Length: 181
Image: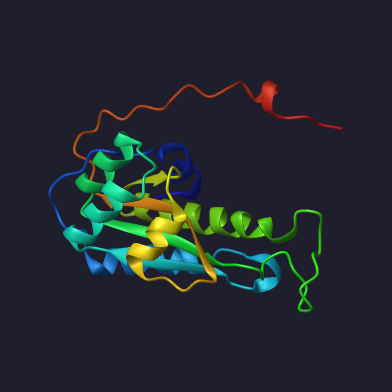
């Protein structure tokens, strides 16, 4: 698939077929995510792939801050990727001082770049994804047993789209979004 077509056609998918996502496809998605740029090449993003239905259900029930739509999406997805970041590195100097006034919040930018690469690689293979941001990162971290220095950024539901009725939401006109100086 051509890059611009992939970008234009990618949509959030919340209903999935009951069909496994091949490990080879996940490897391609993870390779793309790992190639995302990061602050001073710190590579702070971590990927936690969850296939176990019981663990997925625990996350769906306990870690979505009561947002039922995410509970359904996680339970429907054959697999989920829980993206996390190692805290206190991105946006920081080696001595721990902040490089910019964004401080360690820069790690969210790194996470966003990696998540988009992941989702575009999925789309390129005909696999749907949905980035779920309403997540209790502490609860998800506890359920998965992640290290204390990591923070969960998003959960990405992954699977083959159940229907092709997933149109594009209207986009604002470029004149509303772009300033040229």
